[in-house]
Length: 331
Image 1 (spheres, one colour):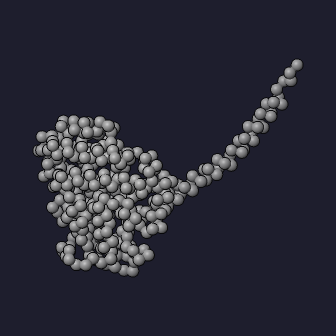
Image 2 (cartoon, rainbow, N blue to C red):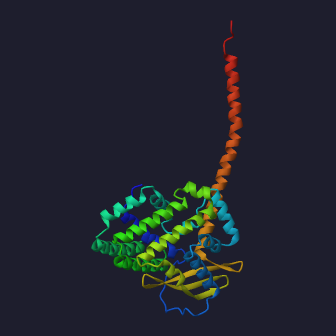
Image 3 (cartoon, rainbow, N blue to C red):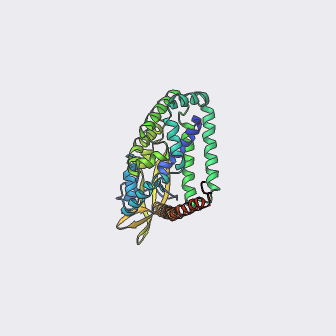
């Protein structure tokens, strides 16, 4: 796979958004939330998810994201090849395996360093301009995206602007820093042993999440070396309940990102006494329904194949008998 370092830099910024956005869904403006105020139950549930991502505990995050019964069904759906949740919770989730494959290639360190030297090293002015353009393009893209709510567009626009400002000031063209980053990411990507969907399937959901944890840690470490602390964003998350009615609540959250204070609203749902992010539950249910339909279709195809096999055998036997009867007798 041929991929420029600039492309991976852009995708790195997007995955930085992914790690934060995994627990934050939409935005609003308001006063600063007092960090000393005891967290209400919905807020505490959201902070628990953020801490698990900060601790690189992807398995713990997955278990806490959905009720136990749904988790068990998602695990089965993964084993059957119908799901890659919770990896599908990431924006640009389709780019995770290609990135791991590129970083795991035997010649990845040398190839990426050559690409960096040719395209990025010493291009500080160009990188600042590219970062600025990325911010403008990102915000414009979000404005025109009909798949997002107004609140989601507002939240993601805040994040894009913050990352654009960070990228414009970050030492992205520093050659030694790039060498250290490339060495770290390529070595850690190889240790996952995961670069294809077949490998995810063979490993299973829980083993895959365990093996991806160190890579997520390395990825965040690399970004931190450029001045972008995702762990700071996750552990710095604060919240307050805006409304609560029965088993539904809306939480206003704030978290620091690249020197900016990002604000968002998150819908929460209570199931069996525990609070979960509503959108995660909705996505999981949609995925499980699709997995159930796919499994039913496979079962129907297998049943039809079993039904067709005896008929095919009978037809073949009848043809052989007919051919034998019509053959001329030997003299």
